[in-house]
Length: 205
Image (cartoon, rainbow, N blue to C red; front, side):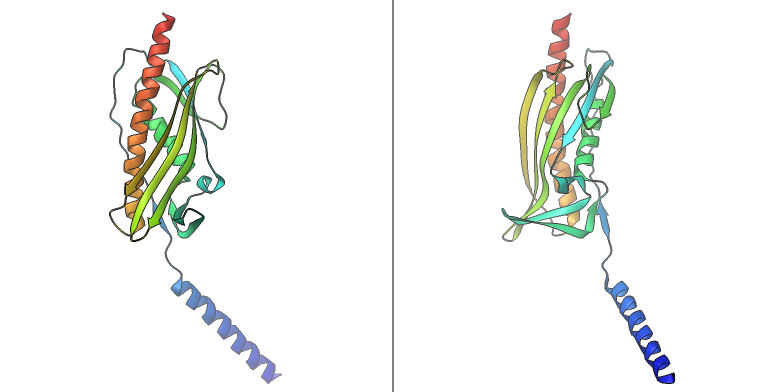
């Protein structure tokens, strides 16, 4: 009986020690965010135009884990390095901020589908990742944008692709690089969206 009790105590101690060692060696989970600012612009249109933002993406971009590609054929999802929210949602929120800065949108919604009587900015986010190429690392951003009229007519389309060399080896450099790349793309999208809608609304008068 004592022998069984002793064996049980030894196994319990080994199990406890294993748990403690695994906890001691487990890396910290690090969370990264974007840093983008948009200046407010002024137009002749009144703020009474509704628009909905729809962002589609591959499944891995609907999760917060950071992604690193080391070849065109393989992608690694980081377990302990995350974005503050999934890339698809971060892009949707940055689009919302960019469109608010235009000044004439009354109602800006993020939705899974386009809505009738709303302009719709449909975005297909295809890449939001780090790409390691030899000794160099890059931030890669790629997306398509389509602007639909309230009647469902496609009135603007463009494809955007940015490759930014990262200044550093940690994921802070990736967050900074993709912030800069996304800022450029958002500026182009908001300018094109504003110009297209202003021309269309002006022709109605």
